[in-house]
Image 1 (cartoon, one colour):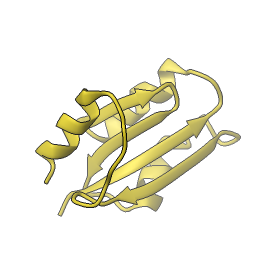
Image 2: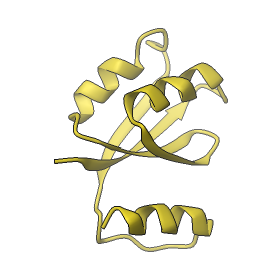
Image 3: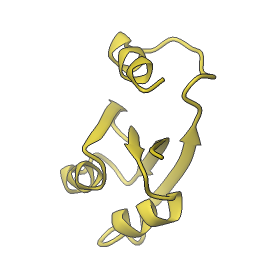
Image 4: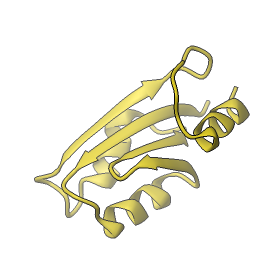
Length: 86
């Protein structure tokens, strides 16, 4: 079963890292320079193993996100993306 994950990455804006995320999950959304939400069947540790190559010194955080329990104020494209995943 696919899960939703928040990926937070801190090493400055890096197109190579963004492309790595796109290759890990065909279904993703970027909402800040260093924040992505993806849908994947992989475990967080498996996602990390795919992302870290070449970015071993970068701070990377991967957290599972609830499909139904979220709230806040963001760009509507993020809410639309999350609603599609319910």
